[in-house]
Structure formats: C-alpha cells, structure tokens
Image 1: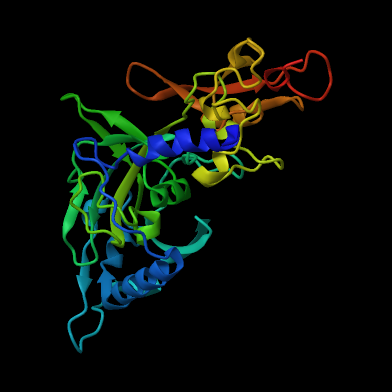
Image 2: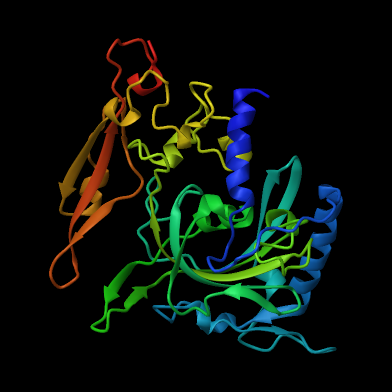
Length: 355
C-alpha cells in the first residue's frame, strides 16, 4: 500500500466513525452495498417526487422579515387535486440544483435557500465556512416521510467539524454565509442576527448510503432532509501548524479541493500523514509553524483589512477576526497574514522544502 493510500485510509477511518449527533453511542452498521449510480437514480426519483408534491410558506421569507429563522418554515403536502395556496411556493420551483462527483458517481442534490446569511460577503472573502472548518448551527434531520431522526430542536446551538460529517453537509454549508452579528443576553444566552437559513435535500450517497447511521437506527439508502441555521464558523487548523486546513487542501492552481478523496492525496513528504494532519509537512525535523511567519494586522474596518497590501508569498486568511468593546459591539477587525518564507529562493517555501 502506498503512503498516499495510507494517508487516505487514516482519514477515512476517522470519518467512518464520525457522526452528525454528539450523543449517538452506536457505530455505523453496514449493509451490502448497491451500485452507486443506480441508487442515485432511485434517490433522485424519490426526492423529485417530494419536491413536486410539497410547498413551503415563501411569504415568510420575502425580505420583509429582517431576521428570518428556520422556525418560521412550514412545509406542507399539496392536497390531492388541490393547488399551492397563495403566499406559498412549490418546492420544485424554489430549489437550487447542485452537482458533485463522489466515489466516481455524479450526484445531484438540492438546496432551498431561505436566507443567504447576513455575514459580510466580498468577492474573494466571504463569511462562510470552507469544508474543512468548524461550524455552529441549529438543525433538524428528517426522512422524506416527515419522520424526524436527528436535531437539536433549533434550541441551543451545536458545533461540528465539517470534515467529520456526511459529505452533503460539506457541500452545502459553504454555500451560505454565517449570521450578521450576535448579542449576549443577560441570562447568558446568545442571540444571532440574520443567520444563513436553508434546507438541503440529499441522496443517500451524500448521506449515510448503505450504513444505518451513527445510531444504527436509520434505514440504509435513505434520502435525507436537513433544515438548518448557520450561525458562525471557526477556521480549522487540524494539525496546529499555523496553516488553516483549507490552505493545505489546495490543488496546483490554488483552488480548494472539495472532496475527502482529493484532500487525502495531498501529502508533500509522502509519510503516513497527509498535510492537514502533519505538523511537519516536509519531514525535515522543523515544525511547519516555525517555517512560516504569522502576522496580525489590527484595523478599524473590515475593508481596511481587505486592503492590506500583500507580497507574492503572503496570504490573508479568509477568517477576519473581531474585537468587541464592553458593550459587545465590534471595535476592531484583525486580519491574519501568513508569509511563506523561502530562505534559499528555490521557489519552494521552507515548510515544504526538506533541503
């Protein structure tokens, strides 16, 4: 087995025993696998049938509500021979169709975007997570028949590492922005303003496929529906080497990989650790964090952070940090810049150069 495949095996092993629910005590229970392409066709038929026969209260998300939440959502089935009531919209006419390739299968999944999220959105810096990041959110998972199998009842927010979740979540959440802001109440609770709100409709191949889920209670090959609010995200650095995981998952063109299979191939020193899990990416005995320079720039506005001049070997991280005053209002913005030093000027940054 090659070292690259070993790295993929290690990451796959971690993911297999991960879950969407922190209190699930069981392990995945596999059943005989079906042909993925055939199952995708069957799942698509089931999801499309649902989308053609159900509608939602679109008037609740027409822009007049400055702080829409997932609790405002009502999805109903069209009565036999009936029409979609005024103020509502057929799901089929409202969803966005997305595609991804996983396990050599072309998967189609669907997003109902109820609110994009008020987090500031710039052309290159968006307040949305990468698929390697951690998120804070509320959610509810159900089957097409309406039975709820998971969730937190949209009460206290929960936090998850997207890398440890089903692939559908890693595809969908980067499509939304986080909340515009948050406020701490006197009772210690936190209120989020203008979060990302939506619903995802996933084929089983982007869910648990032939397993019965982390609890062992899900029917295998189940298409899934998840309603959610995306509240915050936190930039992940799995190996604590100073480089966020998303920057260690870039292809040769500097574009982020989008699947676990691709990410698992990035192993610069071809040891038993892929880059996002390797604190010494070139295996030269010097930790990666000691072969880069990290600089924090404090500015009065987010735009000033985005205007920080960068050298060709510098990167401004996606996540712009904030400082709040005693009243909880944002007083400063902090941009984090990584300088990838190249001491011998050979074109390879020190953290990837073992020589």
